[in-house]
Amino acid sequence: MRTAAIAAVRNRSGAPGLQPSNIPFGGNVLLLIGKSEHVTTTATTITTSVPGRLDRLPWSRWHWTVVIGLGTVWILDGLEVTVVGNIAGRLSEQGSGLPITSGGVTGLAAALYVAGACSGALFFGRLTDLFGRKRLFMVTLAVYLGATAMTALSYSSWWFFAFRFMTGFGIGGEYAAINSAIDELIPAVYRGRVDLIINGSFWLGAIAGSLLSILMLDTSIFPKGLGWRLTFGLGVILGLVILLVRRHVPESPRWLFIHGRADEAEKLVTAIEKRVTKEKGTELPPPKGSITIGQRESFGFRDIALTVFSDYRRRAALGLALFIGQAFLYNAITFGFGAILTRFFGVSTSRTGYYFAVIAVGNFLGPLLLGKLFDTVGRRIMISSTYLLAGVLLFGTAWLFGAGLLNAVTLTACWAVVLFFASAGASSAYLTVSEIFPMETRAMAIAFFYAVGTAAGGISGPLLFSALTQNGVVGDTVLAFSIGAALMCVGGVVAAFLAVRAEGRSLEDIAAPLSVHPPEPLPAPAPAE
Image (cartoon, rainbow, N blue to C red; front, side, top):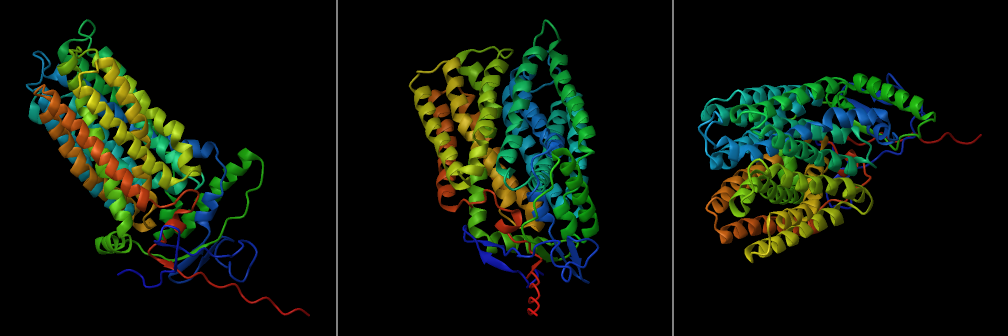
């Protein structure tokens, strides 16, 4: 049962938010009587300044450790998806070692990968909220590595399909565990740009996958049945390196104090502060306010469902609109772009990687160059404008394609521009659902919206896109482009009305934890003598 003691105010988005305390930490010994100057404990509640202490930190080498240890996994995801899209034609050729068609790779295998990602997000998302961010972001990476290695050993279509599903299962778990951990460790003033760039790093993997596929699909270097297997093997090696770096990323202090481990959270934040202070050579400013919560080990599905779909209905609608639009667009195009080039423009399967590398660069530059604006100009303006611009430009691309005015190079250029804006918008979808729901539901909220949005757009997208493009009919491909454009425009319109102004604000201010208690009042000042 949700606690009845939720102290909330109406914030600018119209949803419940934390009422911050005015307690100046270290300045009132009567209140701050716990095991440190930052934590006050009672039998069932604690008052802590951990969120404020994390948000006041200047950017440091420690934050780069978090970014590298957690964010680089999207490079693996980009590598995976791109490689499969680029090798689709090769796998269907005689001598590849697999009895599979190009449509089977871009359609069924792609859909199974996304279905696995949806299932993994829901399964591991729940476990992430229960058992912590660190445990799960180690487990999910291990699942991904094992499944990718087994994909490289595929000698039958059912084996390939099964382990594409399992690879997606691990990646889906990563989305829930990683995004929640990153947003809880990064200071509020940097959260938007860091989250966007990390999610956008998917496209660094896509660039690597594109260029790698060119090398690995060159039959003068590797036989048809070996090159694509080595490509998956290199993904495993990269994942092992990331696993070693990730061991040094800590558990989220926010998760620790919510789940009855306040002492651990206190020691961890103190150690981080000492490290940052030593690096910067200056004292840290005092944290802004405190939070008092009733500690609980876990929250049930009923608590989560009531929170998301009752207390935060408008935010739930926003999350669905953003995820469905970007999931359809990206999964359809990512898995089908190579097939369009070969079918309509006669591009060799061994050359599609060059074209994909170009649109991957555009995708990465979007979050990289626009990310800061999500923290300065604001979430609402940037989310809505990137979605709408991507949709309108894609409608224009569809018209040019239908009119026969494009070739392989100009189509790629159009897609690079479209995806420059779409990539920033799509990355902001993950940021949005991570920061606009309470702490106790964060990983599960990410998992839910990712799973539902991706199931609606990410599974149907590759299947529909494959069906519309594989017959070589221009009008059908124009229709596929237009569906993606329309869904992005819908997401942009919804964001214009419902996006939360979360820039620069603490996560606890954007959405109060379910277990928050009213802060204890300051004692009355002593009368003057």
